[in-house]
Length: 276
Ligand SMILES: NC(=O)c1ccc[n+]([C@@H]2O[C@H](COP(=O)([O-])OP(=O)(O)OC[C@H]3O[C@@H](n4cnc5c(N)ncnc54)[C@H](OP(=O)(O)O)[C@@H]3O)[C@@H](O)[C@H]2O)c1
Image 1 (tube, rainbow, N blue to C red):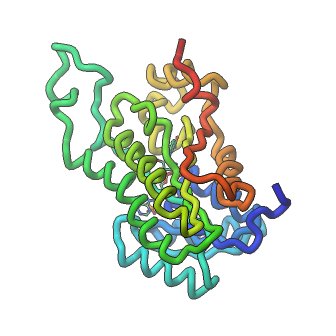
Image 2 (image 1 turned 90 degrees about the horizontal axis):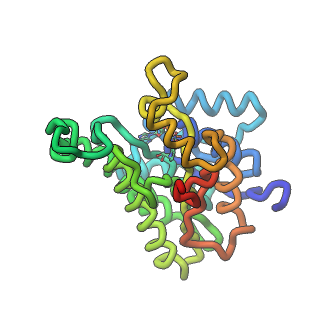
């Protein structure tokens, strides 16, 4: 790849202030892109922009909004066009799990209490997680891709749960599976427009949204679930946020000009390993 593979490109990252997404933002800036930071809390966006500027990465624009709210997405699109005149890269990063959409037990037995198994699943919680991960990808793509032209690229941040539904996080897995399916649909749909649509599929990265599932309350001891993750990850460690940057920059760049409709795992081998 060239030294500045994204020189001259304008990107927008939803969920930009997240643990993983802020590392992707940094990678995009280092690759030469200008980057709009989109999330709900403006103070978090401003803080990220300031931290990056202190590192000499000052080509950012903070745009506040909700991935489930069309008017705020349209306002963000117009702000980017007013500032930089175009949009080349959309990273659908906003997403995640929530305890309200989680089933507490891994497998049901006749002894499983009603509330702890599938029958006790709270549909409002399920909807909340599904909407963030599926609609929260679809709606921004609908709004931002309208401003994108030939040579541009949409990248959705998925999860290994899209392919292998992880126990407990049913809504999250369903949402990411939907988002990957929409990725392939749009890759076909947009091909004549020259807009490529791909996904990056992180494996396990220890962050706030999954810490309660992977570590005990002392923050150190792996839960039984954390131990299982390690056992099924051939590289035997969690990913580091900065290890996602290369995949995102690659798919955003013209180096990937004939690549559309793929999901690129960054997972230490998790999806390649049956566990046996
Ligand atoms: N962590 C992992 O191990 C892991 C593994 C696989 C996949 N992923 C996926 O990777 C992506 C990035 O994860 P992350 O760890 O960076 O997330 P994170 O640290 O949980 O941060 C979430 C980000 O999304 C924003 N956000 C949440 N809801 C939003 C909404 N409705 N509209 C706009 N912005 C919203 C948050 O900011 P505001 O609250 O200010 O809006 C924040 O910037 C997610 O899609 C996640 O599912 C993570």
